[in-house]
Image (tube, rainbow, N blue to C red):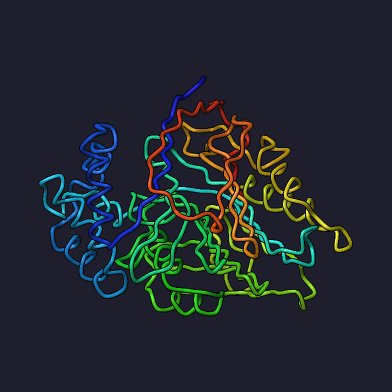
Length: 370
């Protein structure tokens, strides 16, 4: 079955409030986008007002520019800031994906590269690639989460960051801490290297159990595995014996393995496939090698067409930290890779792409557990 999904490219600059106003103008002229921003599904309707106020207060402490953006949109739409769905969705989340990072000694270009796929439900994902140059923070590019957060991206300093669900959210395991889209947004806004990113991650109480991959222009790559109760990280660079870090939807760092939960065989298979594909210490891998595993369909590659079960590839991305470049493939069928670069000056615009997603049923053993 073919699913049609609109994808947006947005490029804006200005103060946080002005950026929010510009996003509000898009909503005024696009009913689907407006409905997304104001939609309240059943699972968030019961969230108490006190919880929403707590989200706003904590954002004011750590990411005040997000509150200003939301205020700008709310004023244009003539609604209360609390009506914008970012606050509601920041209370709970579900999703999955896979990512890996190669140090510069393992790549043909001599650049540090992250490859990632993002899998989830099309109706619950905004699918917006945003290039924002905002006063007071670094320019960043990447896919948004509820418009004001980030699922992945890179900033003008060459710092790239991606995520997966370390423990698949089969059940409610959330606390009052931050969810990944606020953490990634904060890191991309404010950090230049993996060590600064680590300090930000540590400073924000986790409300979920993600893994993060962070790469910087110096050649360092960091893997962070986290639950609300525990965090472990690993950093490699060109002087390390290892040339790659990777994660799918289970923990692999020593102190986190005992916390594995809902460990699916397909997660282990995807993880092992990444290690096997990029396991040759003597080989120099190309961007085409990375794109191939991202676009080949599971089980050969990481591309997944299981949208109705919350595991469909919505995009694939390749982040080149040294070059400041991002390659993006929208959906699971497109042949075109869109190329973005910080060397190009920001040109304010809004583009909409109509993308076809090919949906299939999962294999019989896909959701089997260890």
